Length: 103
Image 1 (spheres, rainbow, N blue to C red):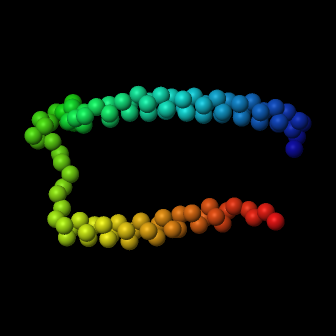
Image 2: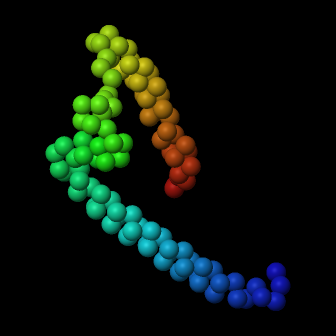
Image 3: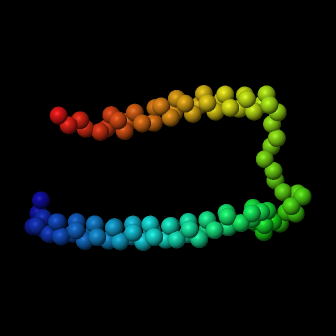
């Protein structure tokens, strides 16, 4: 291992403390931004103001969601169900396999 092997636990401790400090700073900053930016979502019609400010579009010219017929809507729902149901079933499987069993 070498002559400096006995200092390895101290170095690991310092690195761990620094990493935890960086993580906690990022965590606090992200939550501060989340709460700050969540306030405009409570204001009715803010999406119109936001789109006007970002894209310089008048409210009459703003980009809208497409309107689908009933047949298209049901077809899209079937496709989504076919894609989401297997993936939602399969995603917990690796986690269930990785967990060790205690006897």
